Image 1 (cartoon, rainbow, N blue to C red):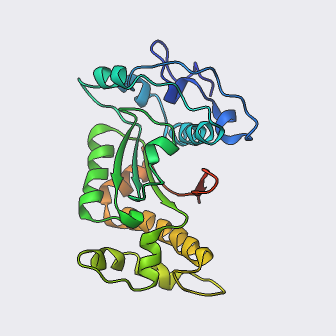
Image 2 (tube, rainbow, N blue to C red; image 1 turned 45 degrees about the horizontal axis):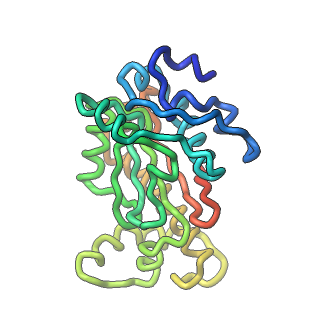
Length: 242
């Protein structure tokens, strides 16, 4: 899949600057010179498969990691998307200020739907939003992104209680019990926190499939993929799970 095979005409940074080799290759890859592009169009988005979107998301993270982020004109993207939106993915990530998913994946206005909640946990409203994103608007990828050094995960491990936060952390606690780990099982142990965060991502992915018949059926039909990932706040790398 080359840069010209996805679509013709109006090209954007999210699509046109990277091929499969850039996404799956080494950190030594050289990025294509940056250009400013309009927002994603329906034609561009619909020509992609879920795997194409995964490749391009990985390439965006590589650009972020190497300091080769795409040059963007956000005003131009805002104007071109004002008459309609055709995002390729819906992202569920944590509210942590160090883990803004759109920036980490080098996305622009109109590229993705975005949901952020402490601990990147799902609930009825988030799943409903995902159903809207995929079944109604046509997004091809559901990406759950956890991250290292997650405070919400550490709080769940240590049984923190504070107002409404107590109930939210309760959604993470099953991942604590399910995580196999040899060593100190406390929120003060970064290795255990990261292990639980990874387990939590996989549980949320499984819950999306189990709870939403709509998303499950779309994935079974090959129209979308539901994928988990972990962002390393020290290296800037996003690891795809499974």
